[in-house]
Amino acid sequence: MTRIAVIGGGRIGEALLAGLLESGRQAKDLVVVETHPDRALLLADRLDIRVTDAVADAVTGADLVVIAVKPGDVESVMTDLSKAVIGGERDQVLVSLAAGVPIARLERHLPAGFPVVRVMANTPMLVGQGMSVLAPGRHVRAEQLAQVTELLGAVGKVATVAEAQMDAVTAVSGSGPAYFFLVVEAMIDASVGLGLNREVATQLVVQTLVGSAALLDDADQSAVELRAAVTSPAGTTAAAMRELERHGVRSAFLEALHAARDRSAELGQAGEDR
Image (tube, rainbow, N blue to C red):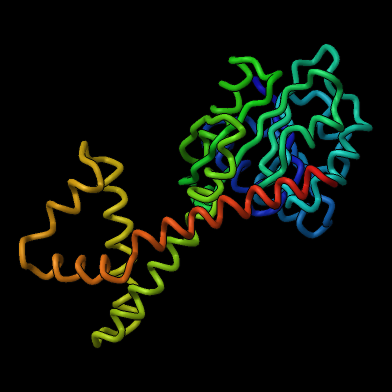
């Protein structure tokens, strides 16, 4: 069985570990690094897995080493990792969930030829509905990529792209939940303006959007086709669509995603220059 070490016991790290346990992984094959004592005790109680405060201790014997810390903490983690006994005869893979950190920056701290997979995940992972996008480094073999795909499949869906596309991925699925929440917020406020109380408005909006997403995911039809199916000529939906188009919703999303893509590239370059 694949042994997995997760460095970082925050919400994302815990969500991944919980998903792995739920998918049938054995607790004995999992270990998490958490340096805050109170959080470490909480993880040990919730997950019933081994918790350590030492990177070197966790990665010894691990097949997959997962970095699940904030980007600003990556350098410290990689420094600790560079001092540990990794690689060699053991067929290890480093999996980084740290947003915006390029593979080359991680490889600088590792033995030559060490396989690295960069991942852009998103917060729906917390409820097992994440979208994880993998970018394999040049030393990653097909069977290793399959291992990482299975790993992230425990908390949602998985896709693979070239690293050059990760800034675009960040703009779409990485930042995407925030766009969704803004739409929800706007629809709830508008519903209250129509006279509904906020509790009812929230229920209507959230369930409508969750149900619509499920329908789109399940149906053998595109978003365009599904939208057309509920838009009768000269009807209420057509009136709403006309206003959304008049106010430039499409162009707003176009500009927003381009801005997010460009900012992701800037942050990645700043990290490379460190």
